[in-house]
Amino acid sequence: MDIETKVKDRYERPTLSLRISITGRCNVNCVYCHHDGILPQKSEMTPDEIYQICKLAKMIGIEKIRLSGGEPLIRKDIVEITEKIASLDFKDISITTNGILLEKYVEELVKAGLNRINVSLDTLDYDLYKYITKSNKLEDVKKGILAASKSGINPVKINMVVMKDLNHNEIDEMFEFCKENNIILQLIELLKTESCDDTDFINKHHYNINELEEELENKADTVKTREFMQDRKKYYIDNGEIEIVKPMDNTKFCKNCTRLRITPNGKIKPCLLKNDNLVDIITPIRENKTLEELKEIFLYAINKREPYYKS
Ligand code: SAM
Image: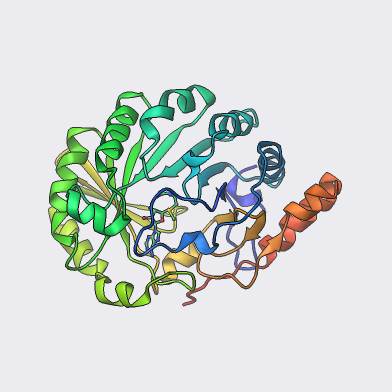
């Protein structure tokens, strides 16, 4: 299926990628966390159930799977989950992790079929890391990043949430670290969503990414726009690469969103920024509904998709 024939929502946006929160549990407690919209659940989806969901995703033309959470590497069956998904032959399987357990798993994950890794790391400063995450595992994260960068997996990216008066002055240092280790730096706007724990923090530290974009535009040797990746900008500077993710009040981000999400309790989530339009897929799977019936549920969820910020 090419993009023209993909399943599209009512706004003509194809559905190309699926981000699955395979657990709501996490081994850090970030001060700004939006929990991908959902709080920890008692029961998690099994590897077989996750496989079923991916099989349905494949049937409707989804090309890319991203595993997230919570912290996905907290699941002891993470390698089995990756292997099962890889057997479905997607264009791309990736993971977003805080990196604490990455050194332990990276080789096995690559063998299992993982194609890309994003490690969330906002600072290289030990005190600030502790303040943001309530954890003192920065050294483990660095080891994980280096192991990933040596594993041959490409690309490895660092997700850095930019926060005013906390780490916005650390971007150059982080970029140097990335260049040294052949890593792409992804700068993320601090987001306010319904499920953030501390909205005062978000208001206080929200950083205007537009200013940063101007600065990068001036420094960059080349600038590219990734149309089917929410119109993200990529800046190529001194043999390094910086990407900007700017969802807030961004009609282009929404217009070009091609992503569907699955919550840790098995619900299809049509929009990152909304929690009131979830569609249960795990109950029908557990009730052994037919593939056709399950596919209809996916299509129903896609039909619920609409841009959060409309032009
Ligand atoms: N535990 C994994 C990790 O740390 O990458 C995956 C889950 S975490 C929710 C996924 C990404 O969302 C991380 O890069 C994190 O920095 C980002 N994130 C969480 N809350 C955010 C917020 N309020 N604004 C911007 N990014 C946020």
